[in-house]
Length: 123
Image (cartoon, rainbow, N blue to C red; front, side):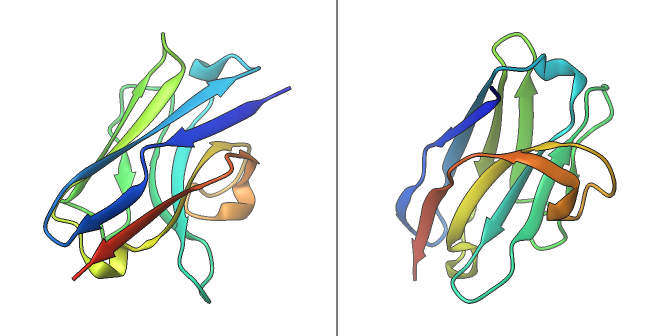
């Protein structure tokens, strides 16, 4: 059974940094692209970042490009999302997800999800 477990969320002030982690079990991790999504209250789940199994660099949403950095460790079966210069509009529940097929930008292309971790950025 595939399981994804996020950690690292919290309440922080604008301008500070936070790093999220996600550990994956139950599947050969290195063969799958992994993504980060977020969902704010009353909004749809939106793409944040994704990285496939090759050495090709991660893709980022325009809203986080230059501030967020995604990394993956294929030995430890983990991915991380380093978030810098956080803004109140980054407040959301953040999810890690395992890609199945289709566009990396669409939540429907991912078939396994973590439970989410809350990130709240105060102004």
